[in-house]
Image 1 (cartoon, rainbow, N blue to C red):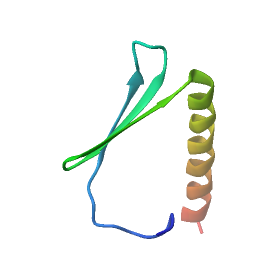
Image 2 (cartoon, one colour):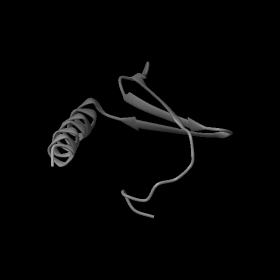
Image 3 (cartoon, rainbow, N blue to C red):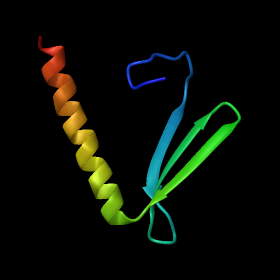
Image 4 (cartoon, rainbow, N blue to C red):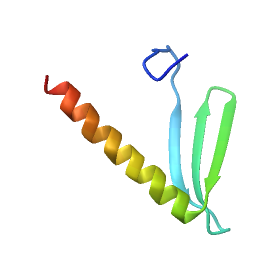
Length: 63
């Protein structure tokens, strides 16, 4: 399975700070729950990667 492999799975994503000063990405699909905690610096790096991917997707979409 790769980034371009489509799956027929619906999932939800919640993002927010924890009471421990971490940033949590909480993914849930059906009965599966995946909490992912990152320190603020890691979260900022992830946000930069998401912004870069969004820009790349926009360029691809304009072709």
